[in-house]
Image 1 (cartoon, one colour):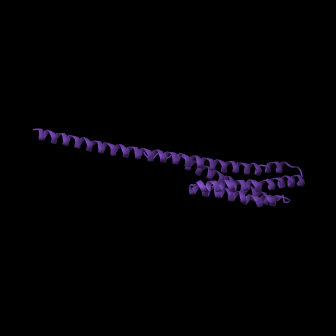
Image 2 (cartoon, one colour):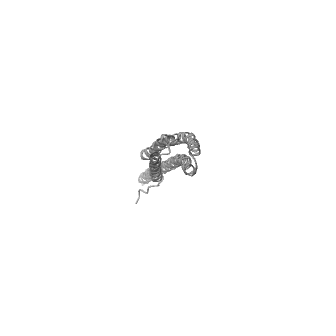
Image 3 (cartoon, helix red, strand yellow):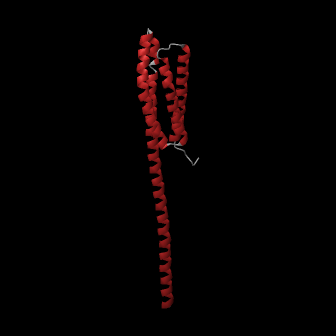
Length: 179
């Protein structure tokens, strides 16, 4: 009988060791899964924060560019050609650095993506660059055709900017995959 008691003890001990091993492996898998989930969540939050920062900088630069172009109202209010040309020249001198800042911001967006937001930022910058020579052409030329070209280019810039904002907002939305 003592022999069977020994075997029962050994079998019980082996069962306990096996159960302990299985429980430990399950706990390890759960801990690894939790660590992966936490790491992924942190990485996604950091990516979103970088994107938000890059998008805000692009928007800030586009706004600064717009602030230069809005001075066209002051040009319209000027009484004589000399005053108009002086204001246009001031605008032209300020528009180059504003485009340079936008170019830098666009590259930040390009770095952080995604591709559709990067393309939209690039389009905003290109539409801004298109305005620069049209602004210069207004200096000394008060023809309505030149002004209409400038106004049309500005509308294209605004449309590109609104598109960028929509795509940036979409890229920052948290998507619920469980729905």
